[in-house]
Amino acid sequence: MNPRRQKFVVFFSPGTLFPEVSQMPVEMGTIEEAIQLSKGVIERHDATPYAFEFVTRIIADPIDDGEGGKLKVTPKEVERSARHFIDGEVLLYENIVGEEEDGESSIAARNMKNSDSPIVVRCSSPFKTTSSFEKDHVVVSSKTMEISIRGDDPDLSRYREKRVSEWRAELKVWKVNYKSESDPQEVQK
Image (cartoon, rainbow, N blue to C red; front, side, top):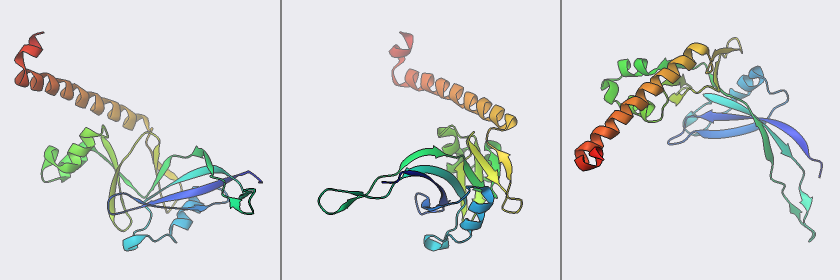
């Protein structure tokens, strides 16, 4: 059976609705190795990776099924790294509102607010892709092969907490106002 640990790099490329995902085994699982490998990944519509993660799985060779055939052993994921965005630009909610024609009413701004994601990362690979930028995400430079921005940066963490807290307070006010408009007696109880 020969169970063993194997590292993989999982690439994310722009898709039509969801990202295109491809993976390949890696030796070391370094940023430099992943960025070099990403240059050979081309998905549908010539999309190339905008992000990657490292995954470690326990894998094993197929086993005898007792009837002359083989059974594939399903790999077990035991570790996953942060998502690494390649040459991404980190944008705050205010940046998105300022660049959108509809401001706070824009789809992008409403999506950020509705998903409690006040920080996003935008990558161009060659298609523009915008994703939420969470605490466990990082931006890496394809030139220096180093992490340039961390999602758990103290300033970004404070901003994220403050903005989400404000949005949740707005939502509570909205719920009370909505409830009073729809059922005034319910609010009095």
